[in-house]
Image 1 (cartoon, rainbow over the protein chains, first blue to last red):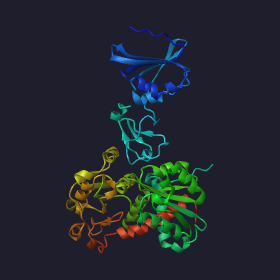
Image 2 (image 1 turned 90 degrees about the vertical axis):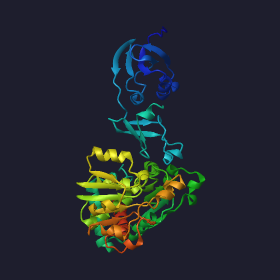
Image 3 (image 1 turned 135 degrees about the vertical axis):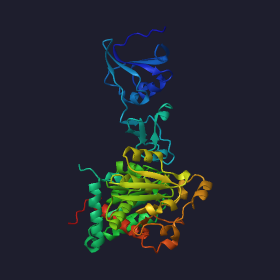
Image 4 (image 1 turned 180 degrees about the horizontal axis):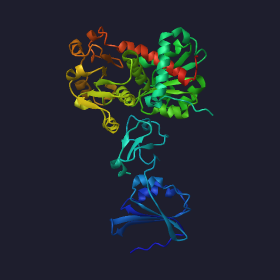
Length: 147
Length: 308
């Protein structure tokens, strides 16, 4: 069993679907932060068989975790302070996501204006449906797994 | 700073605001002289990135009828878009020249991008297969003016219900009124998109889908015909196969109610036989006139010009 040391302050993202940690690393913008990150892939899990874990040592106010709710709301987010878990963050679907999905509609304005952010708005919380802010193209669960 | 009002979708206006807009449009119809100079000194920019005669001329006529002036372009090749300028940059430039802008663009969401960067009101004059709000306002005003109400009726929508943006916008606008029953008449390949069906189910709006126009004619209070649009197809073969699927002729009109009305966003190709034009129930040319009145009312509303 691989051991990674405790972190002083930050987050431990547990129960990430195996193989998805790099995608989460990217979407959280961790590559742009100057902080310690441990990525554990394919860790043994009683519940999931295999899982990924991300440990991020950072000021807990610097990281926006909204996107996790969109990627997978089954991820467990442990908030760490003084090397202890102080709370678990509940994940919910963000109202809006920016530059996570790309609009696939060839008729959408984003297909020709490259500088435009790809923004999707949550239109149906129950069915987890997002629509492109510009052309209203629909994105559901199936598309989520492609990111 | 006061927030600018734009028109991107017919739903941008509440039904109370629409009532106010239609009252104004009907007053304009009755008293055109009263409004002939109210926009003097104001300029409308018509930025049309794809060909359109009707909508552009209707906007221009509306502004001219109000005593204002118009400027603009009528296809992307005669604008700086041909040089690669973005919509965001174009609207910033247009904002320096005009007081209000009507924009048509083949890409969906382009007017919304323009509105987000504009310092003048922007009207979506059609964006790809997405929205065409002023056509919807025209349709609603026509129904209200001729039928005297915007509730309690059965409306048949016929033709291209898949790509027909006028149809999608009209449905979204009509579901806000009471007791509307929709009948969707289309070939299998051009049926109404599932997100609209889902929306109707959620709102508990009554609807049905049929393939044959003849069988539903006697039930209709309003028939909304549409053209199968060549420009919405990537495949020429599909277009040729579907373009003549429905043709409304005198014989079919005989089965309709005596006070049923036929609307069409125009241009018509051959989905309505010319012999139907003389039938008093065919109101699609009157609809064009209502389009000018409603655009006049819209220009006044967005420019916040209070005539009284």
